[in-house]
Figure 1 (cartoon, rainbow, N blue to C red):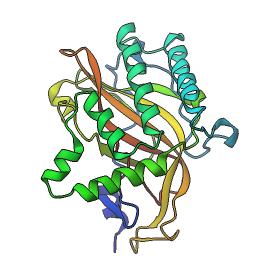
Figure 2: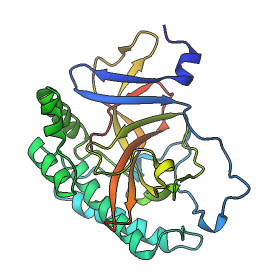
Figure 3: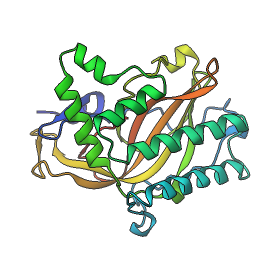
Figure 4: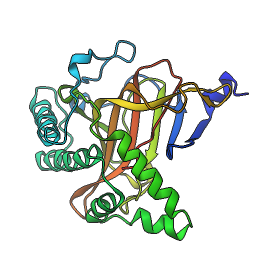
Length: 279
């Protein structure tokens, strides 16, 4: 039996049978609230993230089609550019860094919601200079499981509804310094696979990491942690949350590289087990 104490200190790794989807569940694993006295407020950007209890109205979400997805991604990028030009916006990054971040995200987001097969998934990753996840899995004797996980995940995330008007760019680390954040108690975190040669420890490496967050209807399963059994018959059900794509800046290569993917809960009771990102 998993007690409340266990839930507050453990990250339960849930392998969802039949779906081939892996999720990491972190409960209340977050930095403390509030800004430290020394925080430089000129770099602080206003957040447009929805309140975790209220959520967003259904009309703010748009269900893309294969034909409309590129335009919706372009609208999301325009929203990010407009927010970056608004008074009080983040000034830590240069204009070029910000534009490169938006371009990297736009390409990433388009691929993430396109329902890629394994060949296209691998081609996209390796085009960024990443190590082949398929080759790594094959070397571990897990080729079939890797393919099943990628294909099933990309199928479940294909053309999910999202809210372009609420996208935002948020700093996570600036030169290795963790920035204050508070997105609620339920977070799914998946390291990028492959890692694109970026250090895993942002603080020790002095990385600058920024997130691009987009509210979306996340594929999830309602899970009973007391019994570790699905209460929805392994049916994928939509849960309102925030997809977060985090990128680390590599000054030597002058580019952003995928570093983490997070899912934040918006409107849920904390009992959902999310289909973790494979991107």
